[in-house]
Length: 280
Image: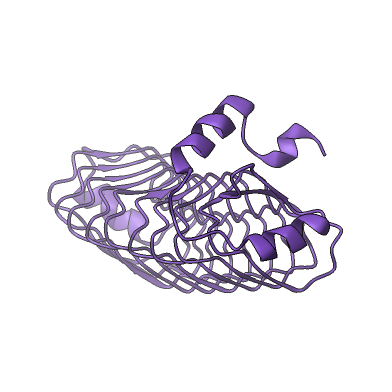
């Protein structure tokens, strides 16, 4: 098996394994031994699941007790899995850990997971719902990018920013709960989420990134709190039904084409002409 499939650089692996030795719940050595005989790879101390055997035809898999880390790309292209359960005591999920798990519909993420890596669930085309635990502190870039059947998502309190392309092209997403802890909505965070109809951005958010809600075609109303000071270029570009906006009183900059193609743009050109850069 290639090293990159293991998902962690050798130095990173050694340091992380050393840090986790003796941590977490007791290892289920019997289960691990069975899994290893089936081509599933673990770190030496059994705390890191490095690589699942993508040739297995199992539809369900329970990660053994005692595993605390899912390595980068560990389940990449494991197209047979539909249901996955992670054990209590898990702390982190690596980058692209479940990339293109095309049949995955449900995953249970336990309390205690603090970090979810970039593009962790990218292109999981059948993943429909997900609840991130309150312990989560870091949401990586593109975490649910191209999860086209994802209908709802709850972002836990404590998250400070919604990452670049976090929900890009989640075309079935109809609702999303953004907690008060969020300060920044990064570029393209919800771009092409075409079935979101309304949005309440919580007080405390200070910046809405470029293309953050671009082509959210059914978005009809937005509340932008007074805490927001900047709206990035193209933030609501192509939101063809957006005609009701409660604009922040504290906004100091509105990027080019931020509301291009929105019914609201006509009003904005009058009320915020000195701030809004637009193309006729």
